[in-house]
Image (cartoon, rainbow, N blue to C red; front, side, top):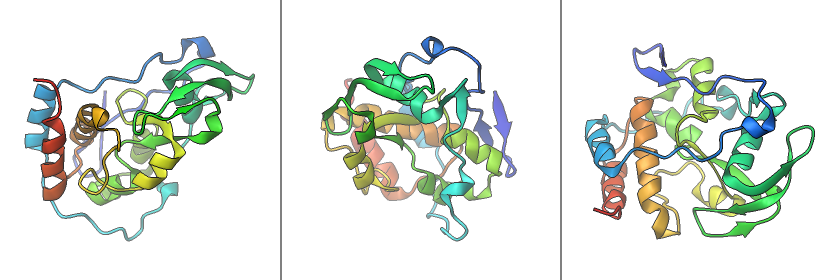
Length: 211
């Protein structure tokens, strides 16, 4: 289902809150489309210079919202992306094992992980989300349906910041194919712009995908 943006763009709706028990949480990270589909998506993206950061605030992208009972978006992603994750009565991850796809680091403490927005909030703002409503930005910031959220090492997430692929790419090159497919698909789904340099780097990263 698509939620029309004020500008006429269409913003995919994120998963609606549910009263489902923790064992009903999403089981796996959503797989982005195939490289062939994503190349077509990339070719169709609007190429434009970044918008101004004037007026930007992370508060304009409300997160993390409750998704399943007491489970907010962060805890859902931690449970989904880890192995043998145990949660307390408030849905907080108290044990488990996590593999950070960006840098191949392994963790047993959820406090060492960040939930990365594959397309960062500030990048989205510069790419067109500055024209969205707050509810539309909330959908984007908590999207569990598409490959926009992933649990990774806090170190890699903070190195990335709000940079686009031409400015930062995962140190683990084996993840470049998935990362570029996810980034491009999110930009396509949310009708966000790319820069010339961003598009060129995405093309390079997609070239690492198996034929």
